[in-house]
Length: 450
Ligand code: 5AD
Image 1 (cartoon, rainbow, N blue to C red):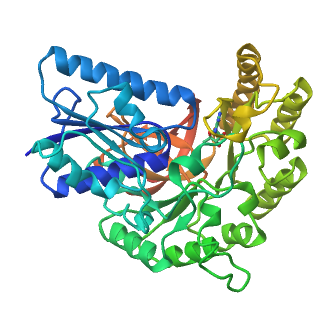
Image 2 (image 1 turned 180 degrees about the horizontal axis):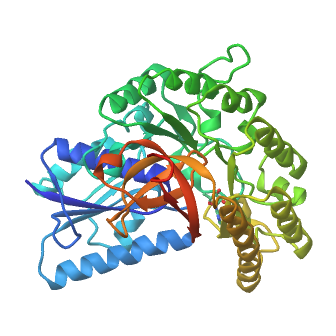
């Protein structure tokens, strides 16, 4: 049977989609290749959020087909996911060796299309059509794929986003918001827990809008909070996380859920994007600086140890030095545990790409650097504050870089490395933090688990 290699770019949603496609192919008898050159089929699961991510995948494909051709290897190659969706057939016009372009609503058809291509029944396949109920098809898991994934799993709860932030290509790549049903999601989570999973991360492009159109509020709880309640009921599940939310989705019902549901980890990713009200408005974010600060305060009041991370865009069109300084000052005020900073990248067919006053690249780079220095300085202080503290971690498995070390995560989502062994895997255990590395804590379990 043929072997397949899937390379994933971008976010956790993409990782999850790749896993579901890999599981689907394995169920059909495919094997998973260890490298691209050893594979009969190579799929690149792509990201379109910034131009850089698209260029990386295009260059990778160019190298792949060049190498396969020079080594006279017959390989089926394809793009799937966000860039496949937004560029479609154009990708084959640009790279004629590409055999398959599989959009974001078509992952469940991967095996069928690859079978046809491998059998020579079809020469090229491009499928980027919308498909009703495709949101419920990302379901299969590959729990034996890597030791780590069997402790912690991702579950896709919805697809698409209707927020239409002016910088963002996601509504075009993932489509309209479509949510799965609560019983369907809970059934998938139950199966995972029965197979040994102890932590579940609920995924979607805007999870806080889950069920907005289909699930009426109940006792003041949104559809998303009702889903959290339902997943929380599952015996044997220890931890629940979710990503990515929208700040405006942190209503009182969700804030109360952190205090009410012990399995819901004290961690929140709150994408800020900008600290300037003028820019937030241009971005169509739907909140102000003050509102954002209010959410942070509410969350910290409910859970003082909560880890708060964010995404920020620098150099959005029209961003002045004053606007940027408002972002800096907001970061000083909030003290994020970590922040992902992005230089604004114009995306096709988005309103911001056509706005006047595009910020020159040198200024975007300079602001990126200044903000990075500030957020790293704050993050390092926050990491250092863990030294000497005892924290609970869920052990995921051996560390990728050094197999003698084991890796786990705190409830507030920080990575902890310690000298462990296979018996620790899947365990909740207490460790004492002894030192910090770059975005890592080093712990010692011996002191507290005698
Ligand atoms: N340019 C730069 N960053 C972007 N993001 C989304 N669209 C763009 C863009 N056009 C960032 C946002 C989002 C994260 C996933 O990617 O910060 O939260």
